[in-house]
Length: 163
Picture 1 (cartoon, rainbow, N blue to C red):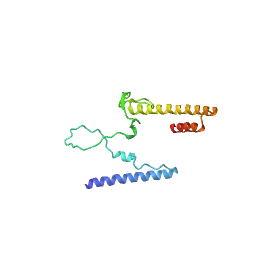
Picture 2: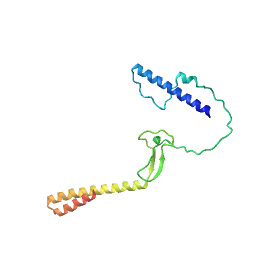
Picture 3: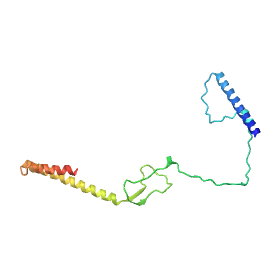
Picture 4: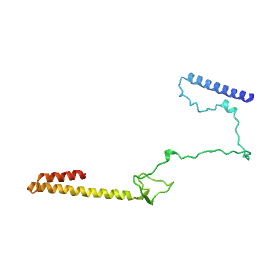
């Protein structure tokens, strides 16, 4: 235990002595050095002398243990794909793992909700066109003196309600 403590003290002393020498050298040159990253270790030739490197041999592991863990996806590389309408996928053009481009069709949906919404829109649009033509006819009939202004106002009110 005391050997480890002595070795740690020697390494810390060497690191401090080396960093002090570098600070003095930079001050003597008169050039300001950028601040060092405290998480970066610089190995000087003095420190390199005390480091022993070599290949580690492959050996059988005598003891093993099991730990729990979790594998998760990179959220920045994941995209959620959704549809503003409900329905069933009729045709799938891309699979998981395929590279896709912006604007590429990924799937075709068969939606009864969308069909109903389109039908309601077309019905409302045609009704609006009908009321517009009724107002135009009423204006012509009023100009000819065939109908009163109340009838024109009623038809205009129907048009504004349809919009």
